[in-house]
Image (tube, rainbow, N blue to C red; front, side, top):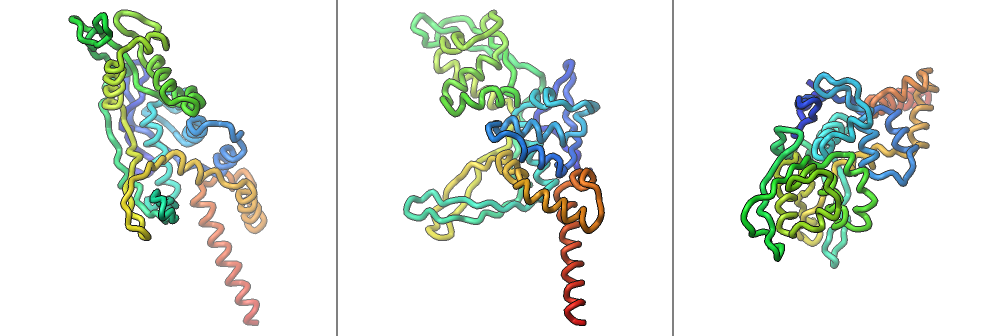
Length: 302
């Protein structure tokens, strides 16, 4: 059924996991919201706005608030944006890349199928997970006897929003802060802070990060391409959320011209036009333009 999809991870409430989601494509009012918002908002915040308006339900849950959307796993949010992009634009997507070869630098028109974007299901079976790490010896090498139990959750959209500015300043510090947020208990201690993370051996941090990545759902962002000019093959990061938000972040003047054109000819109310998904709104614009052109040709023939 169109608009129904299954999360590759899952949303937990009261220890119950919900995976079925019903989506509706973003209407003009959502485009208006995204375009009017302050430019300082991070991508994760814009994704929250988008999903809060386009998710009709998650399992039986219909009260879809921004707080609930922030609680979705980061990979699940990317997946839902991917599905919204398909509902809005179809499977075929065009984008412009620049060849990374410094002796070329040609702009490359990319044409790819969204259904070919790999989605990793992950291993989400609970809202939190545990793992055992070797306790560090006096030298901090992590080889002493016994084990250190680590209880953690997976990163969410709320983490992305709160750490967005720190990622720009220092990715290393952002990762440390993310671990401090996601680790709930370590070696019997609750309330993990950045000092606890800094005190971990690098090998332990890497092991925790690897386990989190293994369990988390993920929309693969890396794609392969060949430059037709220099014939150099390269890979590039495809950020589905950034691409779709940029596509929806229409110039307000264009959106209002479209609303005006339909309201002027069809006498529809602004609210009714802004309630239409973009594809439907622009289909009416195409039909109206064809009709006006045909009428113009008929007038010239007379």
